[in-house]
Image: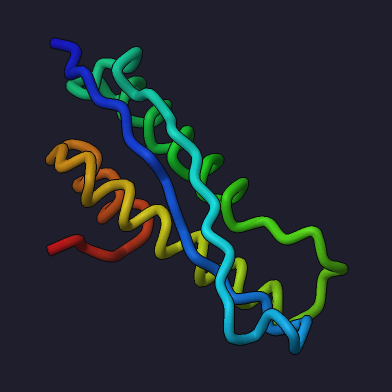
Length: 107
């Protein structure tokens, strides 16, 4: 059974590397469609989860030179974006896959 879902991964990320932008946040969004994946099959779940992770990486990428601080910010952003996307999808099979792979549960 295929479940039709499109979700938007969005995040607000303050770029503290530039003091002038420290008080502002840039919101990046990316819509992805996981309806092409059968979320009742292991392969479909894996493909949808991977698509969510890739989108989260893209919306959380900065154009700045990599530093320890912005790597940490990007990691936090990516993790938050994945959780928010999975929450908005509200699909038990994806939640279970996330819990298994990330060792975290979504309430």
